[in-house]
Each structure stands twice: as structure tokens, then as C-alpha cells.
Amino acid sequence: MSLRVEKGEFVSIMGASGSGKSTLLNILGILDGYDSGTYYFGESLIRDLSEADAAHYRNRLIGFVFQSFHLLNFKTALENVALPLYYQGVPRRQRNEIAAEYLGRVGLSARADHLPMQLSGGERQRVAVARSLVTKPQLLLADEPTGALDSKTSDELMALFRHINQEGLTIILVTHERDVAELTDRTIFMKDGRTAAA
Amino acid sequence: MFDADAFAEVWSTLTRHKLRTLLTAFSVAWGVFMLIILLGAGRGLENGASDGFRGDALNVVWINTGTTALPYAGQNPGRKIKLDNSDYIALAGRPGLEYVSGLLDLSGSFMVRYGTRRSAFAVHGTFPEHKYLENQTLRQGRMLNDGDLVERRKVAIIGPLVAEVLFGKQPVIGEYIQIRGSNFRVVGVYEDVFGNEDDQRQIFVPLSTVQLLNGSSAELTGMGVTIANSDMEVGKSLVKTMQEMFAEHHRYSKDDTRAVHFFNNLEFYAKISRMFVWIRAFIWLVGIGTLLAGIVGVSNIMLISVKERTQEIGIRKAIGATPAAIVRMIVAESLLITALAGYLGLAAGIGAISLANGFLPPMKGLRDPSVNFEVALGATVLIVIAGTLAGLFPARRAASTHPITALRNE
Image (cartoon, rainbow over all chains, first blue to last red; front, top):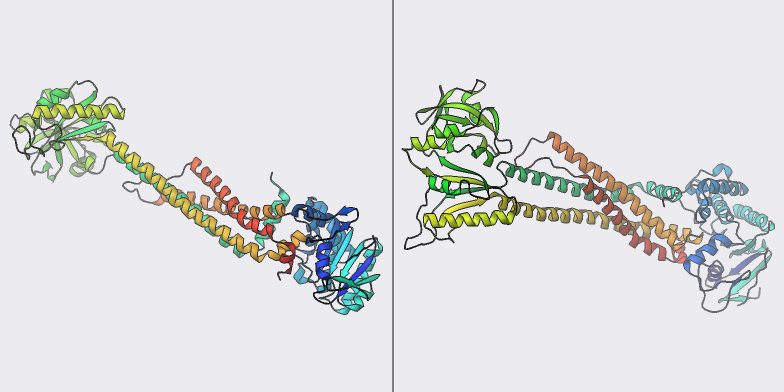
């Protein structure tokens, strides 16, 4: 398959279970390697990276939003958002300031000291979005981000994504909900590991 | 390279899993506690044992009469060998020897009386030099002197327990006690700080006086000498020379060790010291074994913890934690638990030992159980190394987990 996503695009990937969309997202997110072909991130060829290099790329270039949020339950919203900065070696005070700023952007300043369990699903996902943005990545990857949310909060989340996209961030989103896919600029359909016509 | 930030990160993880942290910490603290207690008790035993030696001069050799065990020059074994003044004369002034004393025990059963009070005590005729052999010091009055011996005075030096039993709180010096019907004037009370209870209840009188009471005999029941040179080999060869001298003089086989008994205190001391080296090694072995069990416990629990936190580790990796960062995190957790718990165990152990020192009644063979600073430091270093090792194995497993697998783990 061949796929090119331009800087600043807001793209969705759709497909049945087992169509390979998650595998594609993992490769794009440098969570997984690939056997053949090439993957360019901007100018850089992403291939056979060491674990440390892959971690470095994930940290600096890519933000992740997952279906089940994947927040650390024993850390507050603020600490969760600040965590990627910890792995960049940003000092505690500074990273908490930055994290607070990003929590503000997703409208959760008041919830900064809450643990994930004390937050609603929509709030948790917004914390996850704030965490994915805190390192100022060049690409946001969202794996079924609305999968665990009701339609109202889904809409709110998609509006947030749209807003972020308008600030210039490239977003690739995997979903199996047509409503969600329609809120993106372009939808790529996948079947048996290949892109398919709509 | 202490990193306050990393510490805070680790600390927050540990405090959020209180029970697990507590259980892990306990096993390590217990291991260290046991190690310290064992080492302290071992030191106490060692002190106690060396006190036993301080009752006598370390370089003393006791010579006692015995019975031949080997035939010699046509004579059957079973012959009693008797020592007498000629043996004393042979050894007195001999090069290599420091003090020489002869001993004649007053045998038979009799009571020592003072007024209406009476009790049985061991009475020995000795030379003034005897006090050096038994490490006796003077409490009051005076010790035996050469004049007592020459003039065959009926004077006695009594032990602290004798004074207590016969005199209670009354004055002792100048009083007369009755030994086998003869009156002896008490001229001194000795002190034998490190001696056992028997050492406190002896009565010493001039040897010549006892020999006179025995019917002008020249008999000795034993002798004691101290060796001038503290070197073990010198002492051994000197004892061998004396053994050969005695064998020739009393006509028994040179290989017969039972005809006359030679007890070389220094040699015995060296034997006991060697034994304590082994005991110490054994204690370390047991203590480190206990500690090791604690460390394996930590490693085990960290392994479970890592398994339990697979998803957490996946998340951390997804947002940019390098494998090295994961290893550092787990090792730091392990290290923090072991170091803190180890320190607590160390403090508790040292506390328990000083408590025992303060409250336990004095016991024979045990004195001042203690742990010195170097040992405590060594144990601490051991804990830190062990903590690192305990964390390393689970940490490497955690670091090698693939982020996708980890994230899928719900």
C-alpha cells in the first residue's frame, strides 16, 4: 500500500477488524517495525531504529491518544500530562507549568489535581489529548479515540481535534464510526492490509 | 548522581503501592536485623570466651601430676608420678620462663572456721609468684611475700567469697581463721576480676607452711609457670623441653603425655581463637543467607510488580521512555526499598543489641554483644549492592516488553 499524508492534514482511517489499520497506526507511531517498504517521517527514513531512538522519536515527534485513554491511574491529571516532559528531562516545576497550560487548553484546569478515576470518560480522554500535545509533536495519532465515549462527548472531542488541527498539527485517526470519520478532511479505507476505494 | 526528580517519581510509585512496598521492605529489614543480631551475639560470645582466658595469665602453663599411660624401663603403666621441690628448683630461674610457682593442695575434707562460722574452701600452699599466674590483684591487706615462705608463717590470703562467707561485713585483716586445727592470720584479700566463681573461693597460704603441716614433706601437687616470650612457637618448644626434662627426671616415656599434664593456656587460646574465626564465618554465612532470602523476595516482588504494571510500562514507553529509563526506574524502586528497609533493620538490630546490653542480666560466657561501625557500614554496602541486583533482573524484563504488547494488556 502507498499512503501520503501532508503536513497539516486531518485524516481518518476506516476498516473492519483485522484490516490492518491498527498495524498501520503502530508503524506510523514507531511502536512497531515493518518488514518491507519504507516509511518517511518528513525527511527522515524510519527504519530499524534502536529502541532508544524509537522512544526518542515517539517522545519528540508523535503524540498518542488511545481508545482506553491509557492514563496512569496513580498519577493526577497534571502529573499524567507532565510525564512525557519528564522523559525529556524537563525540570519538575517547568514541566508542571507547561502541563497546566495544556490542561487549560483542553478546559480541565479545575481538574488538575484529580486522579483519572475521579474523572469522566470525556475528561480522561481530554487529559490524554493534553498529554499528547504537551511535547509539541508534529503528528497526533488517535486509535479509536471516541470508542469509549458517548456521542455527545465524542462530538466535543472531535471539535477539540478540529481546533488542534487548525493550529497546524497533522492528525491521523483510526475509527470504525462513519460519523467520526466524516468529521475529518479525508478518509482512507483499508481492507486486507491495503488501501481500498470508498 | 542523585536526581531529585527521579527520586520523587520513584517515591510516588512506592507510596501508592503501600502494602506491596511494606511487605517487600519487611523481608529485607528482617534479613538485616537477623544479620546484625547474629553478629552482635557472636561478638558477645567471643568477648565472653576471651574473658574466660583473662581469669589466668594468657601465657601460663599449668603442670599437674598424673599417671603413666605407657610402660617405661620395665615398669608397668599406671604408676603415679609425684612432683616435689626438686622440680621447682629445676624450673626456677630457667631462661625463657617468667614466673615459676609450685602448688600443694591441702587435700581431704575439713572445714575452715572463723568463730562460729564455718565452710569448706580449697586451700593451697603456693609461692608469692602465684598471683601472676592467676591474674590476681590485691583488694585489701597484702599478698604473700618471700618472708612468709622463709619463716613458714601461718598467714593466709583469702578470696572475696571466702571473706564474705566467713566475715560478712566485719573487718578481715588480722583476724585468725582455723584451717585443719591450726590458726592462720588473714593478711590479705585478693581480687580475681575475670575468674569464675571457683576462683573467688580459694585460700592461699605459704607453700612451706603447708609442707610443714604435712609432716615436713617436699611434695607438690602441681606447678605453674609463665612463658616470657609471647610467641606461640617459642612457647610450644619450651613446653616440649620441660616435658622431656620431667620425663627424664621422673623416669617415664617422653611420649607419655598423661604421666604429667602440661596445659599451655596460650595454645588453648589460639585454638579457641581459631574456632571463633570459623564461628564468625558461619554467622556471616547464615546472616547473608537470611539477607539473600530477603533480596530474592524483593526481586520476586519486583517481578510481580513489573508484570502487574505491564500496561503502565507500555504507556511510559509509548510516550517516550527509553529502555534505559525503565531499567533506571525499576532499579531505583528496588534500591530505595532495600536501602530504606535495610537501614531500618540495621537500626532495629543495633537498638535491640544495646537494649539487651542494658537489660539482660550478666551471663557467663556472654559479654557486651555489639556491632562495630565497620560491620554496620559493610552491611549497608551489601544491601545497596543487593538492592541493585534485585532490581536489575525484573527491570531488564520490563524494559524488553514491547510497547504494543504492553498496551494491549488490559
